[in-house]
Image (tube, rainbow, N blue to C red):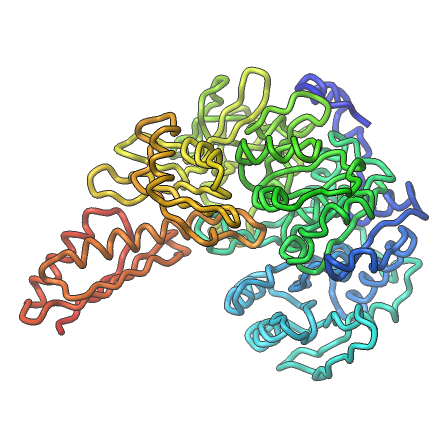
Length: 639
């Protein structure tokens, strides 16, 4: 393994060319090699609920590899062929992991977020031309079956629906009756069909090459419009192997998986990485970190399974700060990774102080398979930094011009974060989404991926994110980094989470405001918090004009604060107030909605005051809307 403390250590690893590293050609071979390192060790623990964490099931590597063979054989026997897609709409279950990596052996796997609405299922599955669907059987309090089964008739390529039953994990619970078909697709019991297949080997021959497509992951970006990112086997193998080298993963270590398995972090960081190196995965409940019984028992779970490592987003760490460690022995913990969004400094410091755990802030994106950089586990961890690039991946800060060219910037200059390497995906499934994502820096060695993030690299090689282009608050041409507001607000003793966004302003474009979620039981007024911001935000232009107290921050399915929702709330508030202030308007209703074409589309409905002529009312409304750069649709009605 490799000791990584400085950028020089990364460069030392790279002295051996990547092509001489004998990486597995595909994810199946990666797991086979990991199993050979620890055949009698535990590959996977799973428990159903946080309070019953000790009552789980376990698979040795021999059993897990056998189950993987059975799953791949089942898909093949049911007709899945290379290049064809099996879609997965499941919570975190052993069958979800088996579907992912068994699906990659037999064809292509496409995990979908079960929290999406059925129309989104249809869009993603039709784009992928899904042949099979693995989903959950009817279960009390869970609507996955209702949503998934309702879309089958709208996906003409779908041939088979495989059903996983949660009742199989609960002794004595009756199994639901299922139809033999839904529309044009047959319905098959996943466990029964899998167990009917041999587990000692694959029943079919397939030469899986590194550039073969392994998976489709949908990603909404900042607009909320799903796009499908393609990953090759080589992408996934490299992006498990390289961070695994940095983190010094080895048999005997235990990785806790609490993030959802339709997201790359859970699949790669707490799935393929440990299995590639013979380590153990603890799959913590079907709902992961969303299970309300998981956090209260988290430290006891760490003690019971001797957890070495877990990965989370800032909201996970903020939540765990409210859970006392008590007498739990958490000495097994070696490190934890925080990604998806920058960790508030005060949360970082307080978490490490209380737990003694090393937090490694890192960075990645679906288009880069998962991991692109991480703070050095054995060296200086710079709070707020995303660390060094992983070995054999290139990462630069560059100025990017509108024509897709640019140049690398000197140290500490802010620009676009670009990556290039074996982990960078070949592109989105639909060509329309590939427009403008590649950058030519003129070095003759191929294009770079523009991540859409802004950042800088310091003189020691550490990378720092400074925001996303779409998250920057632009006030009169001045770029305001939301972290200038959020980090001071997190130091207030009553603040759990803070998110700064731009409020539309007809004079300067945007002015900063901040949404605040208080800690449980804490009290603070908006006026008090605004005074605190005025005293602690370091840049005058960044001082928020208003503080909004919010009961629950809008978050994505993986726990990252979803700022576009806050931005749309601001658009609605500003335009509603401006239009209702017009003498000609009796009532105005404004909706700001996500748009695949424009990012945000504003719908305005106006009722005029009795006696106001239609033309005069429309002119007044257009005069207000014309002060903003939104795409909008307007309906003006006389009373």
